[in-house]
Structures are given as C-alpha cells and as structure tokens.
Amino acid sequence: MMNKTWLVIKTMLKMQYSKAGKSSSQVWAFVIAALFLLPFLGFYIMFVNNMIGALYELLQPFGQESLILGILFLILHILLFFISIATVVSAFYFAEDIQSFIPFPLQPFQLLLGKAANPFLYLYLTAGAVFLPAFYFYGSVSEASILYYLFGVILFLLLPVIPFTIASILVMVVMRFVNIAKNKDRSKVLAGIFSLVFIIGINVLLRLNTNSEAITANFAAFIRERDDLLQLITFFYPPAFVSTLALTESTWLGVLSFAALIGISIGAFLLFIWMGQLLYLKGVLGIGTGNTKKISQKKVRKQMTMRPVWLSYILKELRIIFRTPTFLMQCVIQGLFGPVFILIILMLDSSNDSLAGFMRMFSEKENLLLLFIAVVFILATNATSISSISREGKNWEANLFLPLHPRQIFFSKIATAWTINVITIVLFLVVFIMILQIPAIIILHWLILSLITSWFTSTLGTYLDFLAPKLNWTDEQEVFKARMTGLFSLLYTVGIFGVMVLIIWNMDSIQGLWMTSLILLICLVIIVSIVHKLLQRKINANAQQRL
Image (cartoon, rainbow, N blue to C red; front, side, top):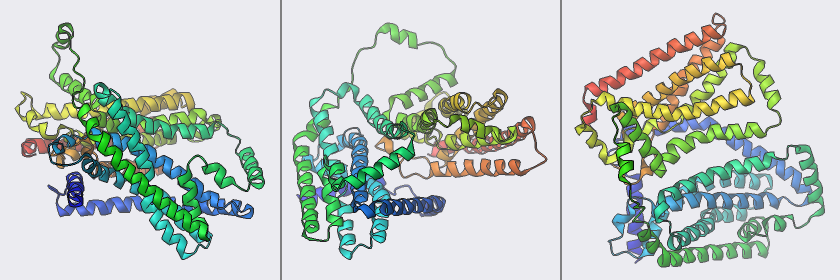
C-alpha cells in the first residue's frame, strides 16, 4: 500500500518537474537568476535581522519577547492557509492530469497524497523564506540553547501540515456538497483573486490609522499591563501558542508542548487522509461535466460576421486568456496587481500632496525618465507575451494548417499581449493624473513612449517563448512554472532600458522634454526593429514547423 502511494507521489512530481526536452546548458540560466536575486536576498535578510532585534529590544524588558515567535507562527499559518486554498483548488480538482489517474487501481487517499506533494513544495518554500531567517535571528539575539534549534527544525517540517489540512478539508467539503460544476472556471479564478485581495486588504487596514506614534505609545502601555499577552494574541489558534511554548520554554512545559504539537500534526494528517478517502474522488467526478447551457441560433449568427483575419485571431487569443482561469490569473490579474496595489496605497496615503511636490522637484526630463522606467519594469513582468506560443500546448500544430501566413499568427499574438498591457498603462495614467498630478504634456509624451515600449516587451517575450516553448504540458500552470523565459525577458528589458535611462539622465547635452522624448523614441524604434528582424529570421527558417 505504501509502496504504491510513494510511486504515485513520485510519478506526479516527475510529471510536474520532468527534465524531458531540457538541455544541461540551461543550468547557467538558474545561475543568472540566483545572481540576480542575491542582492534582494541580502536586503531581505538585513531587514528581518533589524526587525527581530528591534522587537526583542522593545519586548524583552517586559518579559514578552516570546510574543515575537507567537506572532510569527500566527502570521505564517494564516499565510500558508490562504496559499493552500488557491493551490488545493487548482492542483486537486482543476489539473488536467487528474482524470488520467482515476482509472488506475488506486485509493482516493493515494491520489490525494500524490496531488498534495506539489502544493507542499510551495508551502515549504514560503515557510522557509519567512520562518527560517526570523527563527535564526531570534535564537541568536536571545542566546537560545541547542534544544531551541533542534525543536525549531522539526517544527519547520510540521509547519504546513495544519493550515494545509484545514484548507484542504474546507475545499473538499465545498467541492463535494456544493453544485460548483457549472462554475468551476469561475471558482478557480475567485480563489486566486481572493488571495490577492487579502494581501491588499491587510495593507489597507494597516494604513487606516496613520498615527504611528500613538500606536507605538498605546502598544508600549498595553504590554506593561499584560503578563499573558502571548496567550491573548494566540488564544483563538492554539497551534501558534503551543509552537511558541515549545521553542521558548526550557522546562518540561516546552517538551510537553513540543510533543503536543507533534500529536496535533499527526492527527491533522490522519484527518486529511480520512476526509480525502470519503470526499475527494466524489468531488473530482462531480466537476467533470461543466456547464452545458444551450446557445441560441440568434447569438450564433451574430458571432458569424466578416472580420479581418488578424482581428479574429486576436479575439480568439483574448477569449482563451479570459476564459482559462490559469491564463487569466497569470496574464491579466497578476499583471494588474502591481498597479492596483500602488493605486490603492497612494489613495489611502495622506502624504499624496508631498509626493506630488516631490515629483515637482525634478525637471521635465527627469520626470519623464522616472515614469518611463517605472512602467518598463511593470510591463516586463507581464506573462502574456512569454507564454504566447506555449499557451497553445499540443494544439500548436493546428496553426500550421490554417490559411494564414506565420507572420499573421505572430503579429496577432504580439498584438494580444500589447492589448493586455494597455490595461496596465491605463491604470498608471490614473495614478499619474489623479494622485501625482503630473503635467498633461509629460503624460502625453510618456503615453506614446509607453505604448511603443509595450510593443517591444510583447515582441521580445513572444520571440523568447518562440525560442524555447513549453508545448507538452498537462496543466496550464506548467506554462509559467519553472521556466526562465520570464526572467530573461525581465533582464533584457530592464537591462536595456535601465542603461538607456541612466545614460540620458547623466548627459547634460540632452535637456528638455522634447529632446528626451525624441532620443527615447529613436532608441525604441531601433530595438523594436532589431527584435522584429530576429523574429522574422526565425519565421523565414520555418522554425515554427519544428516546434
């Protein structure tokens, strides 16, 4: 029984992370990614170190330093719970490969454990990024014993079990007893949107009270009066309280708390298996039908109208993106998350006038360059263009039989990515006009440059995806997961435009808004032409037929 379960887990992980079709030369790409992220990792570790040190210095005189770990465990469990909701819905029910495993002589709990392996990897990555640095720095500043580190490593391995179990059981109950089959795509999208809204909502709540000095004073007075602050904060979620006691208590109470947490985790794991055996397979079979509502003949005739070929292909691409939950999340919603997040934060910030005044300190040339490089970075992170070819999957060969020239197909894919980028540009316009109060003439120049830049990022992403597409996927998430195309697109775009902006910023011979815009426009035309030439060369070589 266990051998079969382990085989299912290994098989599903191999399907997700297979190296088939990949060359060993791609290893250097991961090295570049590591080097690129290394400075950010250093800043993050310094931030965590300073924050833990400051909190410990504040709380230690009152004997409340254990509150740091209590809040850490509480936040981590909440974060892992919401991540689990999104990953469980996607991996357990809406992955395309689950239907192929159902005919095999496997128990429902074995399928469940196999599908849970990949989400658990994401949870461990998240927990490791948040927990391990804080855990180490707290042990260092508190001069903890070796038992603290031993218990901490084991607790780290148990961290995802309880929030994942709670999220999985909730999802399995909903998928089993609620008629969700007609709205399965909508449900998958809502799970992802809810996670993003939760992140924004937390920031909004934190900014509703802007009097930070009063908050600090009230908090200091509060902890002086409370001896059971840890219990007060974690009373509604016992695992966080027990985990904190296991690390901070050096007496028999710490050992008992550690043993209790292990028992709770084992009980949660067994409950997960039992509920999965009862509910999982029935829930999977219940979503297979989908929505089968009839379409009227009038609506069909309305759609059958003459359109230009390029427009029909663009509309087809947009329908696929907006009707496929994973593509909608990755290409549209996550691409809009950055601008929406900035917009909400700036609208809630009481220092908008000072921010607008800060922007007025710069010249027109510097304002244009700052706004330009900001939109360049956001456009470079959009995943629409870097998945242009890969989204087709095994259906790519159908394009070879369409009465279309390959140039028309690639032009339509570039135009699709450009269209989605326009939504981001419009959001930036709202920020610049309503909040930063940028002069209209600067916005006009920025808008023209941004639209051309959007075409460049769309063309570059399509070209890079054309070089190394991922067509042999069984789940739409594989199009975006564990691929270096997005990183290369970001590095090329930010690198090229970053150097360009830096040179123009420091050139005293280039002054004024019109001269700056003209130089940027000439540079944009040149690099867009280069990328189009590279793409055309691949098309002329009939590379699309060898994919």
